[in-house]
Length: 128
Image (cartoon, rainbow, N blue to C red):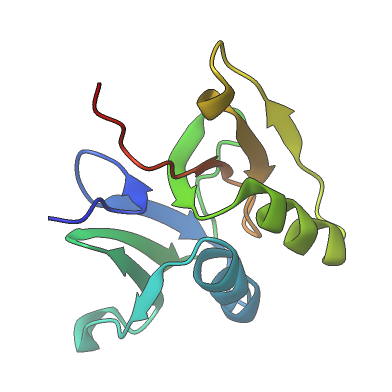
């Protein structure tokens, strides 16, 4: 089974104000490399992105609950360098986070709604 680009135990549900559809589509689709799936008929005021079996669902509401401090989701991207280029082209601020190992590097950013998201480069698994 292939690894999900969304690092989570279960589906991720975020809230966002109305009117951010295009910006969220770019952020999670183009930057995050997630597949957008059509929302169910009962949830027309939402967006949904998927990677493998895990979904990131965005509900639109007048008063969204947004925490810009706590990381809400970590996404695996093919290249942090390319992600930085896309963010800089859109003039989106990010912070580089370094861990002990080179493969622990991440980018911390706020999505268009204001949720803190981290991007982590996916590395091939190495067996010793």
